[in-house]
Length: 89
Image (cartoon, rainbow, N blue to C red):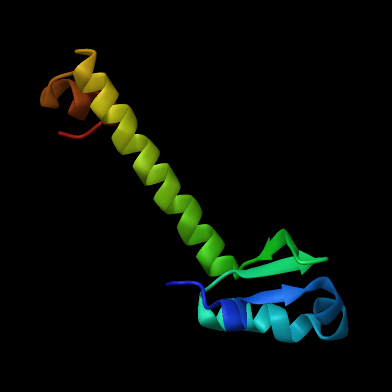
């Protein structure tokens, strides 16, 4: 989901006034909220589900990249070897 700068950029002063509103916005919108101090970004508030999803996606992409590197370096195993390692018949 794309960031909406009119809604997703909040100063630390506004966060101090109503932190629950900012957290709920991040959670409900599925978009991170950029916190600013003196006009500069300093932190991000993100809903827990979105944070976990991002972590899972990153791990998946890393695993794909590692697999492609293994293929490129000829570090592969056969399907039967993989099944044996995983305990699958």
